[in-house]
Amino acid sequence: MGVRTDLALEAQEMYSQNTAKADKIDGVDVKVTKNEGITTTKIKITNKNGERALQKPIGTYVTIEAPDIKYSVEAYESACILLSEEIKSITHIDSKTKTLVVGLGNKRITPDALGPDVISKLMVTNHMKEHMKEYFDDDITSVCAIAPGVLGTTGMETAQIIKGVINQIHPDLVICVDALASRSLDRISTTIQLADTGINPGAGVDNSRARLDEESLGVKVIAIGVPTVVDAATIASDAIDTAFNDVEQQTPSDEKKNNLIKEALSKNIKTLMVTPKDIDTVIEKASKTVANGINMALHKNLTFEDIESFVG
Image 1 (cartoon, helix red, strand yellow):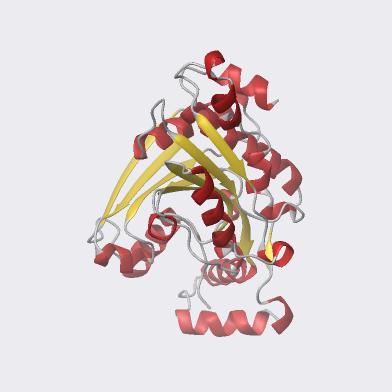
Image 2 (image 1 turned 90 degrees about the horizontal axis):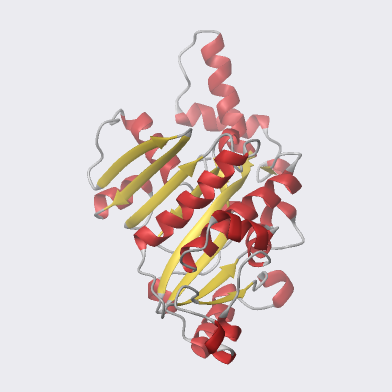
């Protein structure tokens, strides 16, 4: 029963801890920067060795950790601006770029509603750029948005819906937004991951669907996610480690730990996902942060104040 996480940063941390290779992993380059209480970690997986080590596709993963984002206006603003800068750093955006933003997830289930919530806060401009060109300069790019729902309510795979839309509007860039799973409660809602490798919808809750990436969609795909849940088995694993450490015993082997977890968790709750009790507030703040970052990245010369007044 392995510990599940969607974050490349946590995968790198766990691999280094388990193999005692904290300094360097072949095929994995890590760069960490800190500024005003926000830590940005850029992980580049460059070859198959790195891919096998972290169980993530070759590509670039940027993790923004802002522990004070829920309580500090300054941290929230800084995270929005930093996200916009990181989006622009991993893809080319100019005045002719047409972007399709996809809000993945189920809007009826709060921990999974991040994607649809972000869509509701975006500056969508494609229709206005097409029919009111004289009123828009090159600072405003064409942006379309869709929240395709989930298989259980639409009867269609998310990938099928997105491919149909792509065939009609021919975007240059697709940005997919989804809720993620973390192995740490501390990273819930305070961490944003940005990746240029695409995404597996539903992977965070162990319901992975067809992968959305450049190979499957035929267009550049950027994935943005915020952790909103932690696997119950992960919490049990951490509790076991803490208990053994408290009594100064050696931490159990993975096999022994897995057996303990299986004994501790009944059959009915092995797949339980845990989310904070203030998840409504978490989703609202996280969706505003991600939407603001996307808006500022896609529309040049718009200040944080401009975007904030639009999002509300």
